[in-house]
Amino acid sequence: MAENTSSIKESMEQLKCCVVIPTYNNQKTLKRVILGVLAYSQDIIIINDGSTDATSNVLEEFKHLNCIVLQENKGKGNALRVGFKKAFELGFTYAITIDSDGQHFPEDIPVFINALEKEETKNVLYIGARNMGQTDVPKKSSFGNKFSNFWFWFETGVKLKDTQSGFRLYPISELMDLKFYTPKFEFEIEVIVRAAWKGTLVKNLPVQVTYNEKERVSHFRPFKDFTRISILNTWLVLIALLYIKPRDLYRRFKKKGFKRFIREDFLQNDDSPRKKALSIALGIFIGLSPLWGLHTVIVISLAILLKLNKVLAFTFSNISLPPFIPFVLYASSKVGQFMLGDYYSYTIEEMTTNFEGLKHLKTYIVGSLTLATFGAILFGLSAYLFLTVFEKKKLVSHNG
Image (cartoon, rainbow, N blue to C red; front, side, top):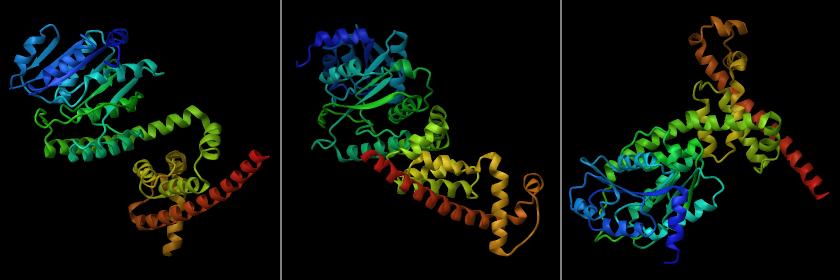
């Protein structure tokens, strides 16, 4: 073998890394996979997920390994979680997972181990990136992977080439305090998203793959499992928009402080003056709009969709923070009165205590949208002019 198996065995022991193999009705390929893994490690945990074929007979040859038999098939996600729990109880810090259908090459185990030894952070989760352009890769697998990659990027901001490969290295010690809700194939999406949200580095490593349709048994049910994955992604997107992305932006702002934030994210950011100005304009428009309770979700979604600066858009949408709300409401109503010619008097104090909002709702909405439009134009143009001048001065200073 190209890699010195004895050195890899030693490294796996030092890193406290085991191999977890979930299996369900893969009698044709299971033995070959186990034998391949045994070349690198004896620390193998096999989860027989309620198999009804000759899997139990195959496993009779490997009684010296940790074999967990589940009487009922509950799904790959559940099997992996059972394997991770067992690995953690046995004192392992990492677990490499490999499918038992023969599509992965155990010879690629050194790829994960070598990368882990060189990685600066040990809180890392590796996903084996398959060459989805191979002629033997089913088109449905290639499409599903692209679909999954997009949503993972949307939910975490991390771009990967392959998010569906089952050949992975997990930092199980970092996952034990996370709560998971999915038991089947969709677990492999949920776990990498929640790990990334927690701060785990998620990366791809190139691995080999083969699809031998004569041997391979796939248990992926296109309609049912794709529906489950879609429902999961819908839920994860909502969590990302309502909590994760605002949380990360706030942490970034808090960590840097106001002056550093303005200097790095506003003035010295690599985005063009035009992109920065449009991001600010978007934030102002959404912040002044009558979409209370939805400002954060909408501004971040639009910033991502329009490929604008999420930090700037989110920051300026906070023009409607609680201390400013009475003034925003007051100004919106006054603008609405002017636009509709429907005048009535009230004070800012009445706006926040005993103001009959529904009675003047139409006036407020018209005024709010008008104010949002003009505010976005004013702030956007002002920011563009300021940033353009600043960029020119910076360029002159740099060249000088």
